[in-house]
Amino acid sequence: QVQVAESGGGSVRAGESLTLSCEASGTTYGSTCMGWFRQFPGKEREGVAVVNTNGGITSYSESVKGRFTFAQGNPENTALLLQMNSLKPEDTALYFCVVRLDALYGFGCSLHNPAAYPYWGQGTQVTVSS
Image (cartoon, helix red, strand yellow):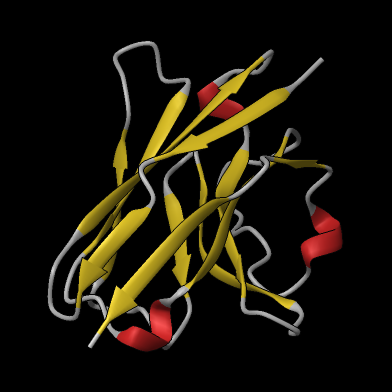
């Protein structure tokens, strides 16, 4: 049974940074697609950043490219960090960690299809004030 838990959300001012953490139990870091989707009030969920942990291929949305970056979360390779720099008010959203177990070496993970990820965390709120 895969369980996904996020932490690290909060309230910051524009230009500041936050680090989100995602820990997935019941899986192996080295063989998954993991990443983050976010949801604005009244809108569909959108992909932010995903990584194939079996090879390290990453994908970032255009809106966060150059500001957000992944880091490995722990020596056991079961956690993933998202470093979010230069935050903007338009980054304010509920952020979800997502996991898919069948990542293949050399392939990217889907950034545009939430249905591709069967395992989701409960979400962590990020609020950026101007």
